[in-house]
Length: 537
Image (cartoon, rainbow, N blue to C red; front, side):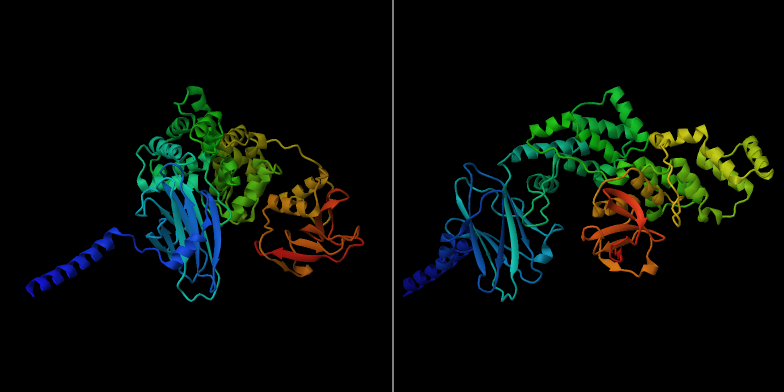
């Protein structure tokens, strides 16, 4: 009896031990009949392929098969749940149907790009074995009452140049930040280069060498280094040209920065060089381009106008005002000195300061000569003002000075200091001192070609009027500059027509006898215009 009890006891202990060991050693679950059927019907998922599926009450699971390449691979797997309610399950199985990885796709836990990233940093399987079939099961056990949209993307890292991409990222950490790459950061940049920022299931926007370099150069870590302009240029040479800066080249780039060329524009110049193109080719990476905003492209003009706000009005520029006064310089409607005089010194805001003659002269010195007034100069100009010389004449004297021309050149504005003026006929009701009206007149004088919608959008962009948002009908009595006139019949061939409303009953029409034309809002033979204002304005 004792022996039987001992045998029974050891038998029970053995079962417990086997169970415990199985829980640690064996995968999460073994293949059942339903799993077997699902695997047999699994759809093949090629590498670098997006897949988009719906789960719904009559289809609560879907199987996919991945066949690995001839050598072992690291991998990335990106998955998105577009449902705000359901939390489906993502499972990765071996060819025996045993689950070795399980992840709930909770929309609340997706990253900033709306995705869950699965790779060898967070999955127990460090590497996919060669020439093997792996299976993916996506399912939901919830009683869902909506279609659950899911997209996922599989990418082999070591395949298709992944090793070279790894070296490229290591190089940027070393040359840009002066350190070795940390695992998390390196994984991030490799994902950007190999997979990209996938905003939609059908679109994968991979980063290029240019955009990744931009990410490093303007990262918080590099900004905290507080590099001097000289050090910044040196780093551009080492990263993008793979050499130290030569004296003449460095002098050239420093002079451009001193003329207010933005540092992003400098980096753009380097990444679009033949040398950086060759570097990207070596690492099998698309070089790409850096897109500049208007503010980066015309950094000197923006800085010049910001300075006028400080010197003349004694305050920081508001965004709307900054945009308003940079545009006439960029479009070459007004010269920099005209923006300074007409836009600032003759503004109501400046007039409201009620400066006395001496205060006025001191502001002129600071604005146009970039210095405080000397005693003799101050006395000279005060005597002129006290003798009755018009303020506008004195203002133009400062604006036309050699010192102000030199100051403008420092902001890279030399080409904007001479504008070939056109003489436009006066149009009743339109203020020709308004640079926007002058620009409309230039459109007409140049016989700018384009369909009506094209001219409307182009001119709106030039003067800073939005054509985005929802158009709302406004009464004709409340119509203002920037509204859009719509015609159901253009009075010519029965087609619809749009025009840019300038005010005082006048519009800038596109394709008016083949070109842009300023003409009344009410056109002979055309339908009555309907005035629209876009919500973006």
